[in-house]
Length: 122
Image 1 (cartoon, helix red, strand yellow):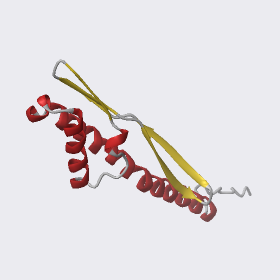
Image 2 (cartoon, one colour):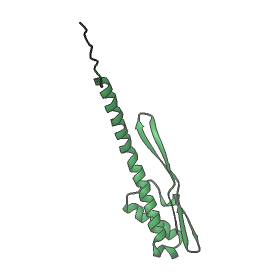
Image 3 (cartoon, one colour):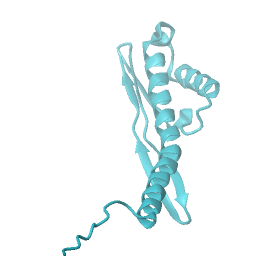
Image 4 (cartoon, rainbow, N blue to C red):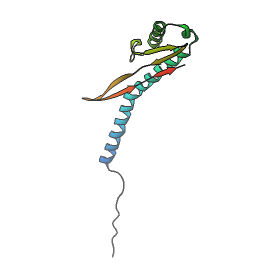
């Protein structure tokens, strides 16, 4: 008489806990990183609005900075001040560039440093 041994295949409780912990870590990481990228997209959008605004074509650099400051306050943008934005005007064409970084604490003494370089030209 032959007895066949059936092997069980699948994941145990320990493997399930490890996978759940990894997924939770990725979700928390995403929740911390997404707002920084959203703010960068807001800043780029703001630059494009200013560059394409007909009223800004004849404005001075000081007026463009003031416009950026007002629009940034409306959109709750605190990552980049108007003094950090490089603005140049050549023959009525406005160029806005910036470079800034955001430090995001993850856990303990571990942080992410993300560098952004938004720009717009017309």
